[in-house]
Image 1 (cartoon, rainbow, N blue to C red):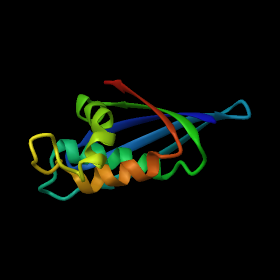
Image 2 (image 1 turned 30 degrees about the vertical axis):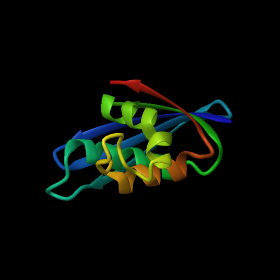
Image 3 (image 1 turned 45 degrees about the vertical axis):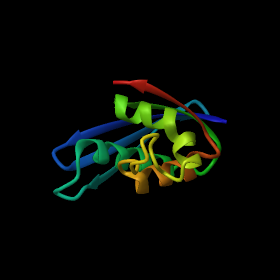
Length: 117
C-alpha cells in the first residue's frame, strides 16, 4: 500500500484537496480544486474536497486525511449509516448522504485514518 496524506482547505465557496506521497524517494503533490454551490455549507465543501481527493486514489493506499471533526465523525458512523440505509439513529436522513455514499464507495480499497485539524 502507498502512504498518502490528504489535506483539505476551504476559501469561501472554493475547496482544495492536496494529496502528498513519496514514490521512489520523490515527493509527489497533487492539488485538486473545485467550487461548491452558493448554498453549500462548509461541511459539504470539506466533504467535496475529501471525495475529490479519494477519487484520485485508484490503487489501495494507506491514507491519512487531515480534516475537521465533521469528517472524522462521519467516517466513524459510515458503516452504521450504510447499514441503516443512510438514516441516523433518530430516523432522519444523514446530512450530505449523497457525498457520504461516494466516500463509502471510493474508500473501500483503502486504509484510512483521520486526524483533526
